[in-house]
Each structure stands twice: as structure tokens, then as C-alpha cells.
Image (cartoon, rainbow, N blue to C red; front, side):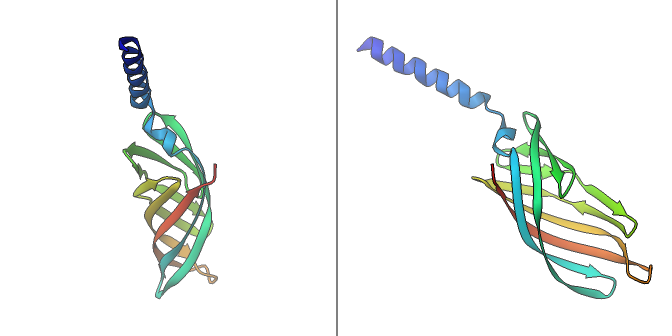
Length: 142
């Protein structure tokens, strides 16, 4: 009986140590498809636009992930949340600085709130201020 109890305790210790050694970033890694509704103001016009796409999160270190795809950002993980750095995107039409903020992971679903500010050209080549905010639901498809 003592041998069995000792063996069970040893297995419990090994299992506990492996749980403590898991990297928080591992839970976030994968390919994600996302969708949401953007609330947009461009010049004097405003409205909503559907948004969808994909991004990938790869592990950089124990608590850091790199986002590529729709945005290029680095995220710092604490528990089930990830806080992303800003992502500036620009082309001949203008620029948008995305403030990705914090995302929350539950199972394979990552909810991210973001906003964007910038300046975009209209067809007459005049630039107008741009603002958007959105909450996306992203599902890990790996």
C-alpha cells in the first residue's frame, strides 16, 4: 500500500511540475479567422462596416506572441489576456494607426477590442480624418 501511495505521490508531483512549466503563450498560438462590425467615421460620414479576415499568432517567448496577417503586432500575455502593441498601416491612400488593446482568450475564441485613427484620401485626393472602433471575435482554427 505504501508503494502505491508513494507512486501516486510521485506521479502527482511530476504532473504538477509539468503544469507549472507550460508556457502561457502556447494557449494563444495558432491561425485565427475573425469577424466583427466596425463603427467608422470618415470626414463627416459615419456608419458601420463588416470586417473579417485572418491572422496568425506565433510564440516569441514564454509570455510573448507575434501577430501577423491583418495586423502586425506583438502581444504580452498575462493569464488568459494578451495586450497588443499598436500597428501603423499606410499606403498611397493614407494611414491608420490601430490601437489593438487587450484580447481575452476563452478556449479557442479570442475577443479583441480595437480602435483606429488616421487620415484617408477620398476619390478627389482630399484627405479626411478617419476613426473606427470594433470588437472582433476570432476563432483558432488549428
